[in-house]
Structures are given as structure tokens and as C-alpha cells.
Amino acid sequence: MTAEQRRPRPERRLTGQSASPGLAAGRLVVDRRAALAERVAGTPAEERAALDAALAAASERIADLAGDADAMGGEILEFQLALLEDSALSDPAYTMIDDGAPAPDAWASAIDAQIDDYEAAGDDYFRARADDLRDLKDRVLARLADAEDGDRVPGPDSILVAADLTPSRFLEIDWIRCLGAAVASGSASSHVAMLARARGVPLVVGLDGDIAGLETGAPALLDAVDGTLTVDPEAESEHAFAGRLAADEAARAEQAAYLDRPAATAAGEAVAVLINVDDPALLDAVDPGHCDGIGLTRTEFLFYDRDGRERDGRDRDGRDRDGRGGVDGLPDEETQYRAYARLVAWAEGRPVTVRTLDAGGDKPLPGLTAEDEADPFLGLRGLRLSLARPDVFKVQLRALARAAVEGPLKIMVPMVTAPEEMAEAAALLDAAVSELEAEGVAARRPELGMMVEVPAAALSVDRFDAAFFSIGSNDLVQYVTAAGRGNRHVARVYDPRHPAVLELIARVASHGRVAGVEVSLCGDMAGDPELLGLLLDAGLRTVSVAPSALARTKAAIAAHGGGTG
Ligand code: PEP
Ligand code: MG
Image 1 (spheres, rainbow, N blue to C red):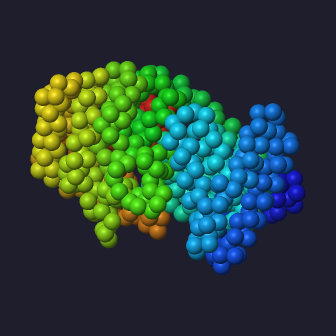
Image 2: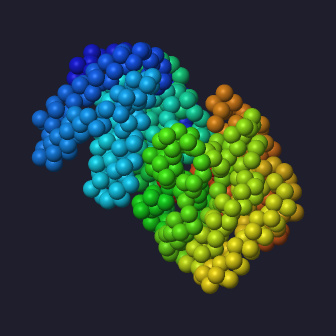
């Protein structure tokens, strides 16, 4: 149903939690992919008929669009139409249906095979064709889910509503056109929330109420500060929201004035503000002069393609297109070296902290992380996994030692519990550097520091031999409060203000001052202006935040009176 055809409805307000602050006024796009999961497959004959109908509906829609498009758009759509009508694309899907596959699975795997072939050609022209195929894949899947085309791709000024939003789906969306999202699942500490904050995309999670009953095209106000979505707003709500949007814009303009000066408290005390990098592509939009370097690089994101597939075409479940699992797709030394060297070049002489692979917990890497853990957050993750897989760890350490020749790169290891683990990591780093030297490859031993995110490490921080410490408050809070960072049922218990959390942060900061070792904090607490004051009061003078939080963090520091320093 188009926006013009809708009859006005009474205002409804759905509530959730803010996961990435911001405001947006637009029209809803209701993602009905979840409906696919609930779809009941029929007999092969019925599934054939369903695919026939979906292909016909998609063709009809594309032909309509092609009629209205300009020359270039028309050409792309004609090409898509030709692809849809090509039996080389649909025949394998029909064969799979005859073998018992449901139509959506058959269509997705037939078209994925073609996408991989186009991608493998490694040529810009063919990559663009792969995008056309992805578009067709979604269009036909939407039809199989009995949804409108409009439910598929968020258009300009849209607000996405979905039952769930995976990191790969998040990365597919053009967040310039789509202004924000509200999802029923998830929590403010999940990885999608982190991606949204890094990009400044307003996001509400844990949305309650009847999402399935919402309509694409309905006008809506997304308040990702208070965590609400107002659908079919009354004129009065719209007016009040417009006032807040204007005030928000003015505040942003004011904060932006702090961007190109070094951060300092109102008392004039300097505070270093670095950035967290989870997707190097985002750096193109960041001026290195606006920060003091990179305080955290989450390298696990280098292990996935943008569409959520591992580099050799495996998906996040670790299966290649024939359904086999494995770790062969991990990026090799050269690929990693280039990625790290690019960060160093971007930073123009500022420090770049690269964290070694933090797979496990909520970041499984199929084929590498253990699959039989009942409690992955307490399992073989972070440095524990790297030490268990020195073959994989060594590739990363070699690449990092090579990139360290290009500038001030530092290595940080995650999830450290005991000093012996640090000693083991240091020995492996030394061995990697010696090996490179023996091979005549240019390398330098970077400083080796650690994250403090396990309570045992925070409590015994003085026992660790580390060149620097960075507090991972996202995990520290979950381990101290025994409340999962992605679990919305215990979101209230997951409290960064808990005195036990603040005491541990103060303890680590104090150790840093006494021992003359740098202590920073790179968890999400630092990017929240309401929590930043507590961190400064706890004695921290270095923080690392999402790029989109730089201006407001610097402004919040300037407004802070001083602290215990
Ligand atoms: C943290 O735990 O605070 C952190 C910075 O790391 P991640 O969010 O990647 O676990
Ligand atoms: Mg962590």
C-alpha cells in the first residue's frame, strides 16, 4: 500500500530502549523478512507455483519501474528483467525445489551461487551485476514472504522497523536514505547497536507492541533518545518533535565547534579522545585531526565481508554455498598487513591501537570458535582463543609487526584473565618478530597492551606486565553485574553506574597513575556524555569513542568541572 492510499489512523506510541541516540521523522518501512522464517513450506508442486508467482510479480514490478525510469535506471532495470527471465538463474532453484527445498531457500541458494561467480570475476562491471542479483534476490524473497516491494529496501526519509536486525543486514542498508531503525529484539550493548552508534544512526531496540500490524508508508517519529516510536503522529506530537529536531541540530552545531581543538576539562586539564574503528571504510568520513588517534580497532570485522559473508564466500554460520564449514576464509597475512597499514597511514602519526581477534562470545567465527559451549561469554574467546590457535594468532601478529614499521601501531589483546596469558602473548609476539627478521622482512615489535574487561584482571591489575591498559566497559559491566550485554531482559541490571563497576575503573586508573602506565577506556560508557563525568571523576584522562560521538564527547569534557585527576 502506498503512502497516498493510506487512511489516517489514530496515533500509536511503541516503546523500547535507546541503543544509539538521535531523532528522525519519516515514513515507516516494515521489514517483513521475519515472515519468511514463519512461512510454512508446501509440496514441491506448491513451492514451484509459489516461486513462479513471485518471479512473475517481481518481473511485473520491474517492468513498471523501467517504464518510469530515466535512461540509466531503465537500462539497469531492463538488465534485471533479462536476468529474471533467464532460465539459467531459475532452473537450479526449480531443481532444488523438486529435491524438497522450500522455494525461498532454493531461490536464495541458486542466486547466491551466481552472485559468487560474478564477484569472483573481480571486475567492477561484474561486481555491479552482482549487486543487481542481490537486488533480485531480495525482491523475489519479499514476494515469497508476501510483502510489498516497498518493504524491501528502505527508501529516502524512511524509518526501518523490523523484528530483528543482524549486523549483515545493518551493513546492507544505506543509512543516508534510511534515517533510523526500531527493532523488537536486541539490546543497547549488542553489536548492531555498536555499529549504529559508530555511524550515528538512531536506533531503538526492544520495541514492544504489534510490529506486524504496522504499515509501510505510515508517517512516524523515531525518538532514539527516549526510546519511542510514534506512528501516525497527531499534529501536536509532530509540532513538538519538530522543535526537538531543531534543538538537536543546534546542539550538534555547537558540539561540532569542539571538533578541531584538543579536548580539555573546564579546569583546563587535557583529556585524550581517540576513536574506535570497527569498519575501516568509515574512516574516509573522519578527519584524523579531530581525534588523538585510534584507541581500539575491532579486527574481527575484517574477517567478514560487508554482506556478512566470510571472505571466501562463507556466511556467518560458516557454511560455504554447499553448506560446508571451515576456517580457510580467514584473511591472510598480506590482507591483514594492508588493512593495518591503511589505519596507520590514515592516522598521520597518531597512535593506532589494534586489538587482536576477539572472536567468541557474541562474535562467533564459525570453524574457529567452539560450537559446543553452553556459555560462550565465559568460554574460549578473545586471547584465550588466540592462544589456543597459535597458527591463526601468528598470522595476525606478523601482519601487525610489519604494519608497525609504518608508524606508531600498538597491539592490544582482549579478554585477559591472568598474567600468564599476557606473558604467553608477549612470547608469541617476540617469536613472530624474530621470524620476520630472520626472513629479512621489515618489522618492528609494537607495544603490547591489554584490555581490562574481566573483573579478575581489574582486581589484580598491578600483577600484569602490559605496556598499556584499556578498560572494556561493555564486557566489564556484564561480568561484574552478571547480566548479558545483549540480553534485553536484564538490561536494567546491566548498569554501568553500579558502584562496583566504578570502583574497578578507579582502581585501574589509579594503578596507571602510580605505575606510570597509560590507562584508557574504550567501551561505550565513554561515548555517553552522562557517564563521561563519572569516568573523569574516576581519574581517567584517555577515552576512545565511536567516530560519531567525537564532537559530543569533546563538548561534554569541556563542560566537566575537573575531577580527581
Ligand atoms: C568492551 O568490551 O568494552 C569493548 C570495547 O570491546 P567489545 O565491545 O568489542 O567487546
Ligand atoms: Mg569486550
